[in-house]
Image (cartoon, rainbow, N blue to C red; front, side):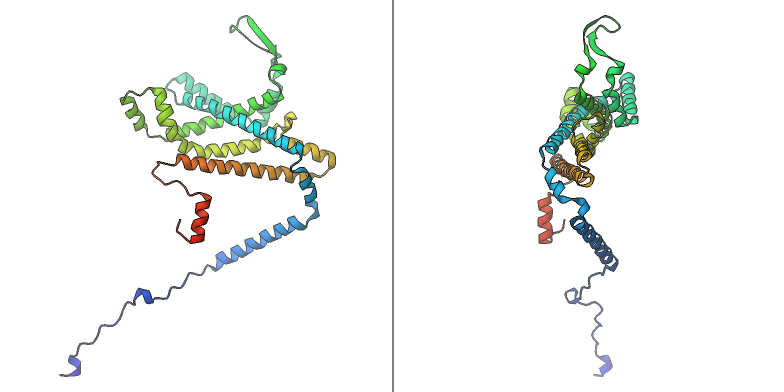
Length: 310
């Protein structure tokens, strides 16, 4: 038998995947950008620690002082009142906007248009000076006799004017947030509920709003955080909230930078707490949806440490 008649083995074209050497991709530009960012962060932290203008001893003296803590409490009160009342009024206006009544829909549209057009500070100053327009407020027959009246300044004090201004301003934005959430609910579910004879109010309360909350919460949480910081505008009314008290203190002692840092630290802490609360509320309402709830920070940390895929 000749050698050319022997069958030669086929060449090995594909190697065993287990024997392949895996070479990770090099991201040199990403490493360079990360190094540059770390250098900038280190410089910033070094400046915070070494620059005497920050006056950290003054910051430590005032950050938990009684005056500042009371001012933080006033800020939280204004935020809570305006959030609750604003979203209650905004929900009513949103359903007026969705109403089939041309009158209700037009009035709701006009309210949103007007209060979104006027800056918050202008509205606050207006309500603060309401007594210049109406010295007395009363109850009676429209265009007829008044049975009971009270002085405007007595009925609406400084805090009351601030709450009214913040509430009416917030309600205009809350109405659009709620309306967008309601429109995100499949209309077929309402038709099915109506076919089952479920009353309209119960449809809204038990079917529409629970599902609309998934679309409402992210934007609503952002609005509440913005409102918390927006309460600083009431300093024009000489209300003792956080920013106003900081201004009063550094107006007396001249320590502008450390006192502004005190206000900044408190705003960062409060907005962080609101962000955490928003995260867990969103996670709760995400249950039962098509997508799985987002992982908690502890779950993210455990996955990172165990190198699990997200």
